Image (cartoon, rainbow, N blue to C red; front, top):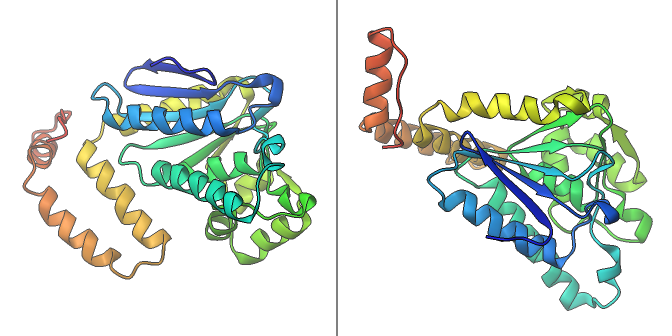
Length: 259
């Protein structure tokens, strides 16, 4: 499919989705959100894709925020609908059964920070900046930022960032637990792809169940233990589990088929 605001590249079972509005620092407008929704569907439906990366075009910004020019026409009802559309897309990313990594280059502010947090984990370049500056506009985050930031870095740190609108650099984000790795700009995509190459060698069904089980814990769902035990039992009967245990006992590399 051809996109106007995204660049799509698939290599070695990894789909790299690049948000491409460099003149607007890759700000999220209605078209970007719509196309990103379609691109995530493509990732989920393609048997040629095992995992994905979301990044931004250029070195200045991952996504510098939402496109503020679109806010002028919104009232309370349409504003809530706008926020819910963004939340729905980011929940789709968060709940994807295929790992999606944010490769954060430059500014990840407002909706950009929210997008990065919706991904399963984050790799940042050393020039990355994170923040939720909506308070400077008399607003709050609308795409899940108040919730995910609190879950990821804790109440006190999240609230300070939300009410001051301050940015943090990549090392601070790493120390807070917001990002998993900090690398040079040149190494950013290479690092993300190297992690996904390891993930892609694992059993797809097991990877998907790990994502869902962790999501139960992330949401404070007490049924997570029951889910874990139930899915452990189910996976024992899969072709991949039989292959994995046989390969271990036979001291060879396992070949997983997602069955």
